[in-house]
Amino acid sequence: MTAPGVQEDMTGRPPVTERRLHPVTPLRRAWAPVAVLMGWAVHDPDGAQRQLTRLTTTTLLVGLGVLIPAAALYGFLSWWFTHFAVTDSELRVRTGLLFRRTAHIRLERIQAIDVTQPLLARVAGVAKLKLDVIGTDKKDELAFLGAGEARALRAELLARAAGFAPETAHEVGEAPSQQMLRVPPGVLAVSLLLTGATWGWLLVAGVALPLLWTATHSLWTVLAAGVPMLGAAGASSVGRFVAEYDWTLGESPDGLRIDHGLLDRAHETVPPGRVQTVRLVEPLLWRRRGWVRVELDVAGSSNSLLLPVAPRTMAESVVARVLPGVIVPPPEAFSRPPRGARWCVPVWWRGHGLAVTDTVFAARRGLLRRSLSLVPHAKVQSVRLAQGPWQRAHGVADVHVDTGANGTVTARLRPAGEAAALLHAQAERSRTGRRDALPDRWMA
Image (cartoon, rainbow, N blue to C red; front, side, top):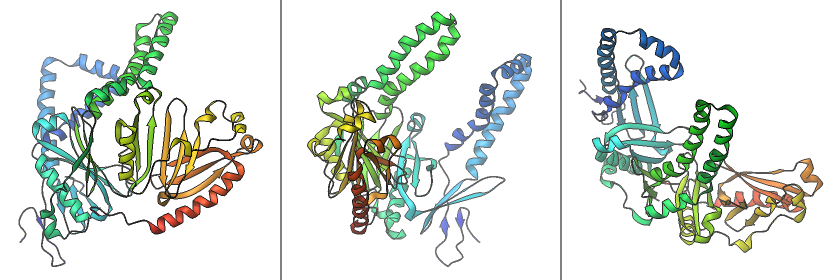
């Protein structure tokens, strides 16, 4: 006989103990039937309004009396029939009441595990685990676990992914972290006020909405156009402030740790060796203060931001931690396109530049909003040369470098001869870099 919650193993190894999610989870899942009705109402508001006007008070109360228990029962059953277990080689998740589904997540394919706590989850003392797995476009998740249990499970999964034996993985615990940088809320607020996206949307709204009112004299038309514009302005300022509040960067053996969020707290990890591209973004109004934003492309992960704002010297030191051995080339190391490129890209051709060192391919673009992309040679998957007829007429070409994160970095408007030589030289540097690169391992 097998005890409840214990699954027999026919290989003779110890049985696998299955666990359930936190008991608060049914409250989250009970919203699914309600969400279906709300989705129908939003999709067909006129039909929903007609149906509601036909309902009597008694019918409405009876409907609620049926809907609420049905939603509660659905939430309870979906929680009751969901189990997860950690075996020697995988995380196994079983779900489904009528149709059973079992997900097998191989531990060696796990690249990052994030712990997130939405506002209500923080109040309830629970957390969500999000797993970045190679070969999947969407993060797998376990929602919800107790906050302490979530961190303990994260540490166990990372330890097993790193190669620790199952009997010792529980003892490893979460790797210690040393704080490197914390972004003060005041600095974050000022940086967002100096970002052009917010003021750009407000400027568009200030010009377009009066013109719409003059042309239509329809309040609904103005609202239909104005709400998305103001929403975009709010998302690029207030929304980012809430999401990036108290941004803290730390260093640990399993990667760089990121904690952030005012309402929803997130605990993320940038895994070592999986970063394909680093971008230093420098908006126009940040330059006098010497600030930059550091963005990432990570293979097998949706994490894309390392630092929302930081002094350039600090950002460059962080880049050296993310890409060991890489030094950000100084401005004088970049070569501009030839003057003939101005006929292909007027004015903006001056913002492009290229620098290639022993360790990194660095391409720069932009005049008002500068962006510097850094790709280590070992992370280059392919190199391409592109030359349209207009570029061919003016003797320039573009060199594209493709990375393992399905991203591309382009050195634009290079002299045709230089571009051809760069194509072959970069392919050789990439082969040499991959041959000499260290393996990507957790807790290395």
